[in-house]
Each structure stands twice: as C-alpha cells, then as structure tokens.
Image: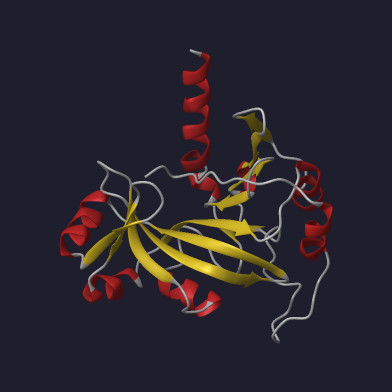
Length: 224
C-alpha cells in the first residue's frame, strides 16, 4: 500500500475558523499538542502530539490519544499490506481530526499476521481491511510507530498552512490542484488539495525520505 494518502476537498473560510481559534474542550488544554507544535531534538528525532515517531509505541499512542482506535492490515490487491491504527476522531489541542497511525513492522511479519488473521472485508474500491488475531494485536502494542497521518476536519488552503507552519523548505506540485509542502527538518509533509481534504504526514526527520523519495520518483517518472 502506498505510504502517502491522497484525499479530496476545497477551502471554505467559514470552516477554517475552528482550526484557528481555541474552543472549550473536555478539560484537556486546547493549546497543547497542536499540529504545528513540533519539537526537534537535533539528532534526527521529533515530538508531536506528545509522541515521537520512530520511538513511541502503539501503547504510547493509546496512552496519549485514547483506546478508541481500530487496528488492522490495510492492503491493496497483490500487496501484503501495512499495519494501521485508525482514529475516526481525535482532539489535537483544539483541532479535531482523523488520524492513521502506521506501525513499523517488516513485511514478512505483516504477512505472518495476515495468515493468522480472522477475516477480511473490502473498503473503498478493492482495498481490503484485514482483522488481526487477538494475540497479534497484543504484540503490536510493543512496536514503534513509523508515521502519523492527520486529516483535519476543516479544509485549509496553502496560505493558512504557511501561516501556522511557516514557509516550507520544498514545494512539490503533483497536479494542477494538489501540492506537497515539505518540512524536512520537522519530518512533515502537508498535502494541500483544492479538490480534497488536506493531509499532514509526520515521520522522524531522519526518516523523511519515506515521504520525499516517492514524490521525487513520481515527478521524475512523469517528466520522463
């Protein structure tokens, strides 16, 4: 399954307001763990939402963001797939979002879990969601998280992204209406799409090639 996700949407000013202005929550601090609050350690690591991509485990994710997530193998046809944990809604400071957590696990291990899986059902198109065996679910809690993908409930335009995150170090235009804003030092790729929902992808800065390399390869292939 491709590492990056691509979703669809258009910016509406009225929908940006909740993303920019703090609102009362459920007792948690609305000014903490916001998407643009990224700490870097100068050694190739980072911290966002109270988590360290590449270091924090799935158990750490549950401790910080809650247990209301679904874990499964997500696979395209002819692919082994990837282990993903999905939050249908999570509060990141005063920002509400969907989140996909990718677990760092070798393909051989994923394949073994797939063979032990209980059932599979189709998602969109021919994508399959494969429920894991309970023993494997327990094992995943001890494994590190490779990446965090965040889909805000509000739509954003490029100007709003730059206002909050600063100027990107790189800008990769993949289509007329879709652009990737790259922040290698923070380990962040923001997909801004005039026809779809925006996507924020976080990895440890030392692993930024996981996000950048497929983009550059696709761009080179397109030019060729």
